[in-house]
Image (cartoon, rainbow, N blue to C red):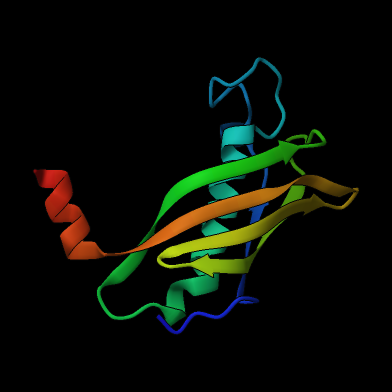
Length: 126
């Protein structure tokens, strides 16, 4: 892999009803859900390394350490950023943040593993 620490990616979201805790069954309030935040930082991490992976390779999620710090209402806009912090073999560890116009919404670390897509799918199929 020719991926270097510091590679970064961004993902943006305008929060709708389908992004809320109610929609994701992770709570009963109409605010941006933690599961949707996790998906957003994963999207940003994929963006960070997509152009740096060898042909036939992808990344799969492995671990999430995230602190959800502030609520975000429907209609608000959030931006997730993932910065590749370190590489441990095939494991790519990203520092992730999510912000809205009021400040920090969530922060933490996300680990993804680089895999050969075909070999990975062969294992899934048994």
